[in-house]
Image (cartoon, rainbow, N blue to C red; front, side):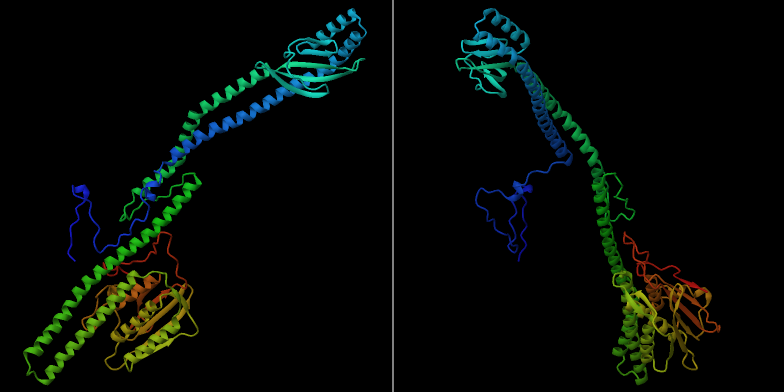
Length: 533
């Protein structure tokens, strides 16, 4: 398929059409229906949301609370007014009955005297005595045509007329001689109560108006204070660089529980991200180092093999014994390349290993298996394993097997005796600080000044057939298992003793993923990983 350059609308051309090999899901929405992304409201800052919420909620609460207070105050004032009306009605009822008797007895002077006493006792309330001959009234009260309660004892009620209102209470005075009912009514205007209620309502409204900007400003201040920690957290997170090995701590306690929880969560996520980034970086470094090392180390063996092949091609009449020597060199070069690649692969795997797949491994069983395989590879080898029961540690079984195999193999190669096989003694035992693997041989030994160097890469003697990575792999695996390896003299003073001590339990890596283990065995020269005694 030919590549067609898409012209972007931003460059002045039409929008780029989708590639022919790209599946684009058709839009099945009816015409005129916008996409969900367009329906989504624009995001708003948290501080603005809090300020708006407070600015709206506080005035509403003020109005609701004020309305409740107004109702309480109105009910309280009305109750006190009703109490006053009842007291006045009870006090005026005897004078009204006396007035009724004076009217029925037709005593004019007594009627005037009773009216005066009745009206004087009314004080600030209105009084109306409904008699058969017509009402006798004085004080503030509604017009006569206003409907009033029936002629029976009842609690205070409100009557209205002409925009005014009165509280009225009715007291029946009994029947007259003619049988017509007589009634006492006491009135009190509600203008003062309504004025106080209206004033209170206005004050509540004014307070609510003032509460809008004040609460909004207060909400903005509180929201700004609350989200300051979030903004600081965002700035710290934005300042993080992927390759920053000295990364500042994003979690700084702010005093706000939710923000602190978010900070801790973000720190944990970044910690896991750092671990994965470090592993990826280590994998890339290991791959590059592996390629560079293979290129460097294979150049010599491949050149030698090419020379041997040229000899075989260029001299077809080569003598039989010379041809056998050339073929032996080719076979040795081939084996050296295979050994080198296997060792480099194991070294790279050790650089990328971690404590995740660790399991309980019995070192005694492992040593017996390694010794058995060594006897098969080298017939006549004398490998003795001393250890009974079980000595279990946390570890990578292939890595620990590699340690024992290389220690035995190194002893078989460098501890050989020209007069016969050299006995190899492997001791596995539990010690106070863990488990110990000790391999002794009776060879020429290693000088003290060279014991630390034997664990470096590609360090081998002039007559060594290997690639110089056997003890390097031992040191790498021992460090991966948080152990230590030492080179010393056996008690007999002849040969070499290599001792490995491993912890029974492997300590877990810390929260940042730093396991304290070197992962650069292929990228740079190791230091003095061993100690000499």
